[in-house]
Image (cartoon, rainbow, N blue to C red):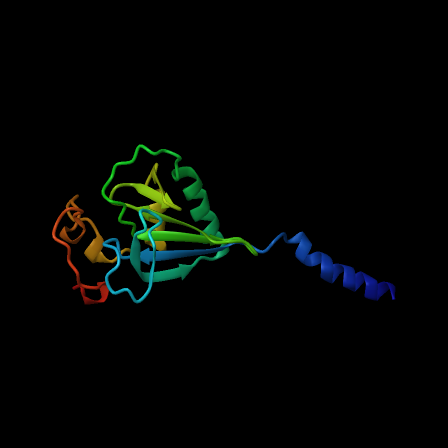
Length: 167
């Protein structure tokens, strides 16, 4: 009986010693031009915008810890934002066990982040660079020679092709 109680106690206490299950962290690669194909979209968290989701990745515990540390450093409560229209290429969704998901979007073009309709300045680029390592931005959206690709110029002519149809 003592052995049974000891085994039962060990089995029940094991999960308590390891703490709560980790948060689920998912990164989404967005079409920074917004919504085009409309097959799978998500909110940009700013001015009721939507963007096509072109990729997704669930992070492991080590990746999630590193990304969260970078975000804590760089997501400043600074509303003095350089404005390009907030065209995010990445969204980060964090879901604690049993709680609602929180999502922020990050725009590398103007260095802003948005959450629930609030737009703030991003202080640094390390989080964006790490996101690019985890889920690389397609070449068609990458700056060339220090300039935005023509497809992303905020006030230029809008290319209405879906991401799948871009060269």
